[in-house]
Length: 259
Image 1 (cartoon, rainbow, N blue to C red):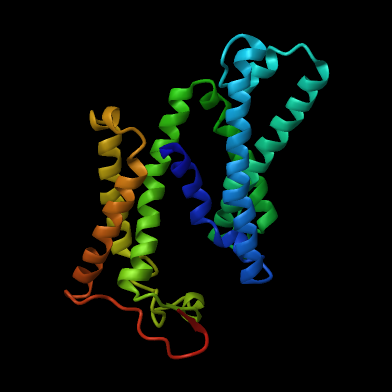
Image 2 (cartoon, rainbow, N blue to C red):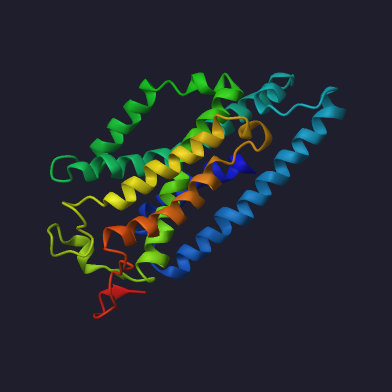
């Protein structure tokens, strides 16, 4: 369960990269309903059923789908399984790793780096990381997810705290596109020091839990520890930055501002 939260926390943060293409809020809601709870529960049911049936069919209960396919003697099943693995791997990487990384690289210099060029660079960079080495060791794969969760959890906590606790549930859309000190989101030369400090402190707390004895008793808690620490720390650091008063983005004054 903890690994599932860690895995899905990445698409949560880059949800806007997909929602921007939605024709309406209803379409986005419908897609989330079918793509997340319905699809995920169906996938869980298929996985559990397959694992349970490996016992009577193959004489041993197998949890690795690759090993399950390797023990079959049907060429048709093997070919279909290889195609399924390829499609699943491509689909997961496009959603979780490719789209967000492409936008991130492109946003670094949007005048010079297009989205397609950024996507090509992200794909090449992912090959240099040799991710297949992680899949050879389940412990290394779990540790990688936990370390990523220790960073993604604080980011999620900062976003939630900034919107609900600091910003009063309001976003000034027009100021998001102003690149000077007149924007409410300019902070300090375009950098929010309170957010950076909250990220460092909360990620440190999450990794402290991850690499100490607490990890043995409570594995996979890095996301929750980091998220909670950031949610608590960011409003306090924002108040300190504004002289003790809660920093507010201000009331909505135009149709361009959304609750």
